[in-house]
Figure: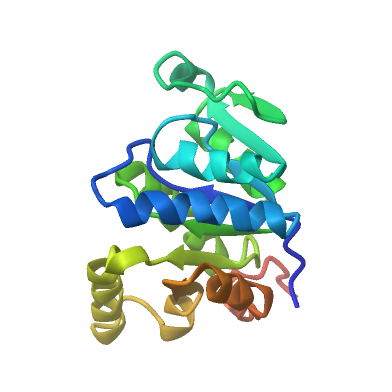
Length: 196
């Protein structure tokens, strides 16, 4: 069983136009707080980001925001967070989020959300971490993406064991359970630094 004291949530700074996505984001924040899981996220009070944070804070959950300096000028930063961490750039932001979190959940979002998801899952594939990575597929939002990944497996560009690093569910509780029971794959020998 994995200890999930903190979870980083990747999601959009826009709300989109699907009310199910908005309500599920808020509910995820609530459930993390109820389970005493610290929320680590991108620090905004707008969009899906803001919904997750509000859901957690409504139930007195601990919320840590991480944002690069240049975005502080553009995004509306949440002022009620337990901790706000400012980084020099986007890469430092992801490194700090990784450092603070025991696992990751991706909600609907745009390019930035996908970039965060694929970087963190690539790090797992390369053996740089063994933390569980969840995808909350609310209303089938990520069905087409999952179809693309399955096509990558069929065509030999993605190994099945690496595809299975991504834990998928449309139910928050079931997804959290999958993350708790996740068993990481062995790091391939060619990736190990030990040359003996």
